[in-house]
Image (cartoon, rainbow, N blue to C red; front, top):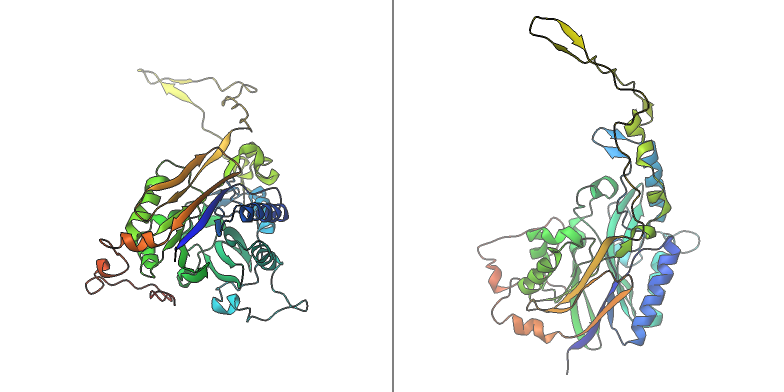
Length: 385
């Protein structure tokens, strides 16, 4: 029997509200269903948003009150899936946690995603920003049309400034999930954005015998495609990578409305307190005979810094670059650039993963696990049943 599935990557961007983004996800998934797509991947932080260009008013040793307002807006845009701060794993997946009077946990996003998958018959994998307690996490959920959400994970290593706004996820959530779609067994797992630059994390997924490797990202650099080709060739697995494509004009107002020149960091406010700025010393020079000559002060009203022109709101601040890669590292679709509603789809024969393992199986014999040992805290590295 043919082991072929039709897979898709949606290159889209977060809308002005989370409810609008959920509606767009539903519309895209319905469109995918009409094209007989079996599984679709959405970008990193699609629900909740990737806060590109936001500073959150932060510098080393200083936080700006306006930056705290930015965080408040961002926190409210995130989704509440009803999980616990430490991550409840299978208990959350199996809905074994205590529920409220309405019989639900969270804000209903989980139930909405499960409804969309069930009604369209499409397996959904989407990036999102999850709020839990007072913290935010960058995560991914796997939504099966038959069983609902069968897995969720949180990014274990946010990159750069992401570390200010996103907590670190649990390594145990790197567990792959298994499902059967039209008779084809999939073992799938996700590495989010620059987690793909972590060799041991990649190996933890290869060790679980994944044949579908998902890489939602926010990286539109030219170096991303070679990385995805390396992952596919290295793991002998199909790779889907989805990135948002967004113009400056599509950023939320709580980012674009923030005037850096009014920043409290700039005028001496740190964490809500005013710090007096010291006067600069008088400038002077000494002549050869020891006389001091005072230099004139700067004339008031003449700016020291030339005002920078306003940025073009129609410019792309993330150009996309979504792609689909074969188990031998060949580019099957993409990368697609500057297409805000791109939809890549490819028919994949998953027996190509086995064909590729004739000469390379980094999750099995090629790992030389008799000589090299990998352990991950709380994670079972054996392939899921």
